[in-house]
Length: 470
Image (cartoon, rainbow, N blue to C red; front, side):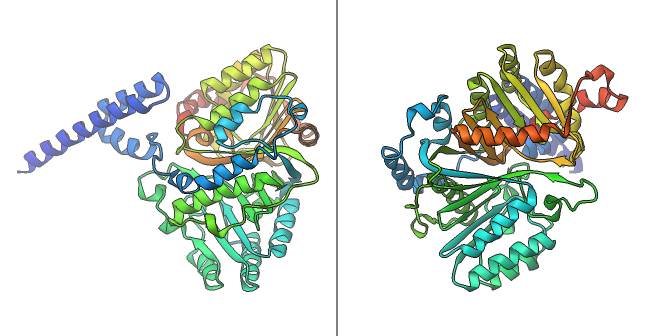
């Protein structure tokens, strides 16, 4: 009897491995990825099957159901675009690829204020929460129950007590350590909480590998925030391990805030199965800065590789410079080729990365890519004044972007991300000035992989094997 059960189990395991192998061959983005999964599943099904359940690339086919329910908002935004079309003389690069990825148009009438580092970011965020009159929408990947987390909690509770409708959402993986008492205190005060433990998302699908990495806050449909900061004292530079935490958020006004609000409603719909469309303000006002802007949200629910395509489109448009700041550098083949091509065209290509180690595996894997891009003329700069976590890029004097997307495969394909794009010379120059200041706290990498210490020489190629999930 025991022998029969074992035989049936082995037979079922191999059948499952074959099914997964066929599926991986159908869905993997590259032949290398497909071949890797097929060989692994069929040669070692005992390991391959559970790992495929956890790490396999399964699109969230049902995630964008909220977009169908919010179609009237999308159509309203597109219809309003006829009245808010940018002046073509002020958009010096082609916005069409970005509009296609976003499914929304670039509009004028927007404002942007760069918030450099945690003190400026949370000072502005807390002031905005205190000024809220109707509602506050809050979403962070990580929320900690520390001094900053409790300060946010107090601000949200105070807003709720004065009659503001507060909605709070965080990621189940990112905020895994957030205690139940934190959420209970919010709910007891009248805050509407999308409890990560009860969400329909990845934690119920063997897909803990997928994460909602967005960090946004919206006040009354008028003011929006997006960037790299999560809620924890380390983002204020109070971590003994990291010291200064170099990060960037952006405060936005104008039509782009309604685009950001639409993305929040989709995330909320997924988390709570609740449609917020009729409960929010979609009229809003314009900013005197009158910038052209677009919100590009990406994730594994998309039909195309929107995260990678956004970076590819930006790199392809660069004529004089493209500067990118990211905490991680684990790009795919297309982004590598685009960076090399830009440098060969004479574009000033700079990649700003932290010298300090946050997560060792992606930090190590990055060294396996540096030789290739440096040989083409790309400058790799290592930031030394603490840990650099910002997600920013600037193209010529034409485009600046701030948001949550890292320059790695995880952000491109596994995480839900968002970037605010400003097609404006003032935004580009302000962002470039900020990055130039960061460059003064950096050094240019000049040693190739063969000249690195042994743990990097031998570790980087091995770490690169895990690139699809880093």
